[in-house]
Image (cartoon, rainbow, N blue to C red; front, side):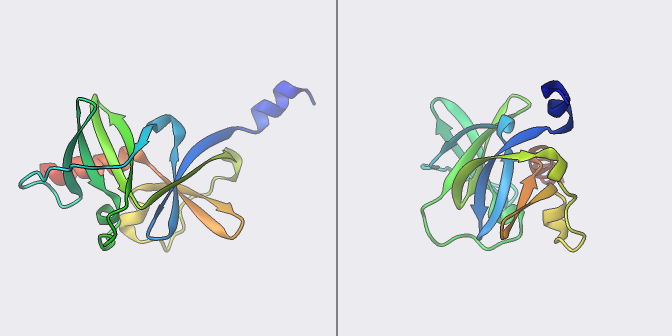
Length: 155
């Protein structure tokens, strides 16, 4: 078998990992623009509860989305948080997470659908899972996360 045949059979994809309430999530690396510490968030009146507010990041207005709230979890009492910067439809968003991890390269052939017993709020934004040694990596569908916020705003 030639190297080109092997490339066709195995397809690796990279994910930026993040922890939220001790659970491991992965975001496709191509969706991530930067990782930063969110400071100076300004509340937005009448916005959905998932939107923590906005901040100015190097001259750009960034809508900050609290992933704990999206997932139906309690807010974290500690102030040390991180954010993952994304862009969608010419808007900039920051996903507030507990901590950022490493970049993992995973075989897309090992990608599995989300478990059937996953909470509906989680299942709505998770595109699949990867089994790691001793842990499950939940793959976030960034479009669904942002789409869910837009749907909540419209309602």
